[in-house]
Amino acid sequence: MDDLTRVPLDLPTWSKEDGARRVPYWLFQREDIYALEKQKLFDGPTWNFLCLEAELQAPGDFVAVDVGEKPVIVTRDADGQIYGFENRCAHRGSLLALEDRGNVKDFTCVYHAWRHNLQGDLVAVAFKDGIRGQGGIAPDFCMSQQGPKKMRISTLYGLVFGSFDEDVEDIETYIGEAVLDRIRRVLDGRKPMVLGRFTQILPNNWKLYVENTKDSYHASILHTFFTTFEINRLSQKGGIIVSENGGCHVSYSEIDRKAEAEKAKSFYSEQNIRSQSDLKLSDMSLLGSFKEFEDDITLQILSVFPNFVLQQIQNAVAVRTVLPRGTDSMHLKWTYIGFEDDTAEQRKKRLKLSNLVGPGGYVSMEDGCIGGFVQRGTKESPDERAVLAMGGYDIDTSDDRITEAAIRGFWTEYRRRMGL
Image (tube, one colour):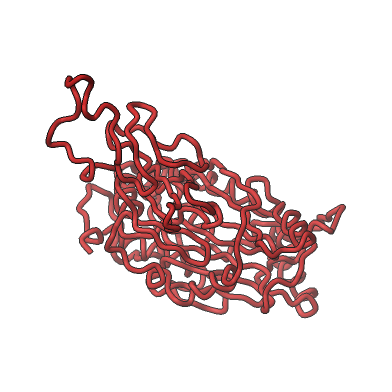
């Protein structure tokens, strides 16, 4: 595609030999890089997560979200189909939807009352014919040729994705069968429902958070809670799946308490790291869970390039959307998920386990600050480079989580799509 061609920029050197193993810090700092990302990764031939189908139950339901920094509206029309288009009036560019969500008959701009239907078409112009033969719109004005830019929409197991490029490949091909299979594992055959939402503001470049979601190596080192309560240890069975192009990934671990209890303690104590802890919970019912899946996977983190995450930590299921806000800030949207056929007891356990994740989650709170540490630590060293050598230099699927293969996969796909 033309959008994937190499773009000449006046940039410092990111050598071809570095590949995805050495990543220069100026990628997190430069305004020209950020502008190119918005063009290539968010307006380009990629799929961005928009919302859950469960948020669009009835005709007229809508959500106002962002693709990168571009505001968009996602709706369900009377034909039952889902549509997406820029949240921008065809007249002077004002926002059409001023609320985050709701139910409407159409979108009438508050500025001059130009009216758009639920598919984003301009259908009426106030005073189009003027008053008493005076004024009115120009004779050659054609409403059908106006209107905000529309998106191509795909739905996948209750997830709604959109792209501003009509020629983007089908989403199943884009994600790849191996990663797609792990989305099915969590969502197929069930109707999700929203249990709660948060938006978290983080003081770092958006790519640092994406790196973090693909970093299976840090999880049981940085997160004291994981190892203390044996939710996730590198000594457990597990592995990573990386899509063929590197952009999508899955990291997972399986619990075997009897086999792991003793050896895990020694593995972590020998490393003398902070995740060896004697912390305790006053109420262990916080970690109460139920058998939900046929396998023994208690943790699965899945990402779709460039900025979508589906997570399962025991019975806490959530989606995350990474939204850039300049070179050194981002928004992280959390949506906690339950399912329509959950019992009251299952719903209660999901809600309790949700305390592990989110802005103040017992696990996720460290992820909220580590990107800021990197942003601050690298601010004055733009020409230095991160080292991604754990697990070698490939981007291959493996049964080993002590690896940075999925991060290297992200940078491999990033370089290709950005033309760097």
